[in-house]
Structure formats: structure tokens, C-alpha cells
Amino acid sequence: LYLFEGFRYECFYFPNLRVLDLTNNRLGLEGMLYLTSMIHNNNCPQLEEHHLLVEIELGFSLGNQIKDEGLLKLVYEIKYSFLPHLKTLYLSNNKLHDRSVLQLAAAIADRKIAPAAELTLAVVIESSLNAGNKLSNTAIQSLVSLLYASLQSTKVPALKSVILEKSDFFNTQ
Image: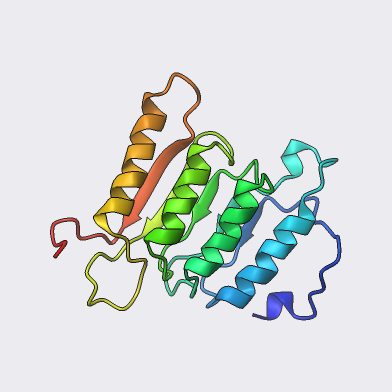
């Protein structure tokens, strides 16, 4: 990943960065470590709300190679309020499983991101398929329950949509 070549762990920030699109970069664990370090160091409380990162795109088409360990690094940044204004997170066509997605759902439920957030996951339920996120019915049910509870709440919903693309809900062998 050439975007982070020469990256050093110094405090820096991008005051006008609102959308970070890293789709189709074959981003793996090393790239996620760089990304989460950048997010961690980019968290500057003196920035006004309109200068904060609100969208992260890490999927689609060819996707990336993000596995549970990589998403858990991002969940850590979310859990400890380094992305409080994040409204949109695209994680389609990666290699995620229940472990990290359930942790992400818990962070969203705890309102660690912006209200009315949108989460996009392309999901492959058939274990014989090689591409895409592989979530069990339990993880999918957890996301749908979070969405339902969120929309039933009298407060601004924690989550406004969950998009489960390319899913075969009827063939759950």
C-alpha cells in the first residue's frame, strides 16, 4: 500500500479530511495498523465538527483483505472515541467473521459513533465461497436486532441502516 509509504508514528492531522476512501487496495492487517494509527493521531479536539472524518470506505468490488484482527483495530479506535462523528462505514467484500463484527455492533450500540450511522457489509453465508465476509446467522441477527432497537428508540437512532449485500439467507446449511 503506497499511500502510507514512509509513514511514521508522529502526531499529525488532516483538518479537511471528511471521507477516507481506500476501496480496492488489498488493504490487510499492516494497512489497518497504519490506518488506525493515523486515525488515532489525527484526533485533535481543537478541530471543529465540520472538519472531522465522517466516512470510511474499506470495501466494494475487489474489496480489501481486512480480517478480524484489522477490524478489531478499527473497533478499538471507535470504542475509545477516536471516531465520534463517523456516520458511514463500508466493509463489503473483506474477510470478516463474527468475532470482529459483533465487537463493532457493541461499539455502535454503546453510541461510540455518530447517531444514525450506516454500516455496509457484503456477506457470504455459504462457507464454500471464497470471497466476502462470512457471518453466521447469530451475527446477522445481532446487527438486525441493533438496527431494530435503534429505530424503535425515542432518541436519534444509533444505527439507521445495515446493508447486507450478496447474502443468501435461505441457504444457511
